[in-house]
Length: 359
Ligand code: GTR
Image 1: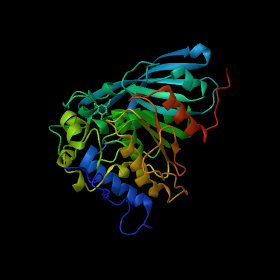
Image 2: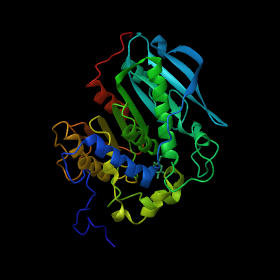
Image 3: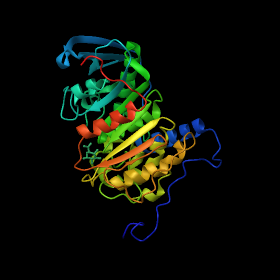
Image 4: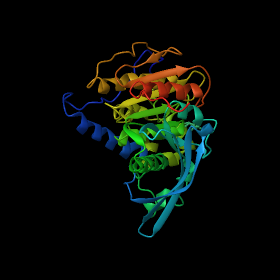
């Protein structure tokens, strides 16, 4: 059957607001989070105390900054778990705007991580490899989950996206302890499945003032209703472990979901979120990501004026957003490119005029 939109119908999205739009946003935001936790991602595990170890520190980037090798150690009841992370920051001894970066690799720099250029903009990054937190496999037991799980996952227990998001928040705990970061300018960032993770981490943890989600697509920034490319059925067949078990109910039944992905984007209001799309990334579906921003903007407009999502489909290269929710589709393929980083840096620089003083 052709999609509703092809038949000239618009998808009817669940409302972001309760019965009374003037109700307290903080209360409604929590309700949105409970729906997404119960039906899609599972609840993010609670914070735990940890011991952080600095394994090595060295001067880097032609003497413009530092790089540190870290390890975070957790214990709970009988279980113990550790994961490594990498910290880079400019010299200068002041508080820097920072990214917490969930990456596919632990290498610094990396094809998705132009580390020196970020340092040159006066920013720090605390990065980790997601598989060091929990393997990207449909098995639970060996990674950080062993701190929280005993036995099988219940239908609304966390999936791996929630575990990776949990790690982002623990790294944020650590960053705040170090006193290196400007507390009002800390961003969660990730690409693809880790763009979904950055959104879920930032939606739940209000200490992230910015969230940058690159090419996150299905079950990330894209609306699921009327989506082309990857669907809930395809993603839950291939990656059931990313989500809670309940999410599977909606495979081929998107119209019955009591939510859609605009709930996730709205939860970040009144903080700042930017969605990066790529023209050739049809699997993620730029238009669905754009329409999700448009549907979420009413939450941002509770706090700041803005109506810049007036096009029906996004135009490549055009930057949308004035109210705290931003969208841009660039040319090219599915990738976290230098151009994407520069876009996100620019958004943060508007509120963080920090340049390296050293070179
Ligand atoms: C794909 C998946 C997408 C996207 C991507 C990635 O296979 O279908 O949802 O997340 O992986 O993470 O690279």
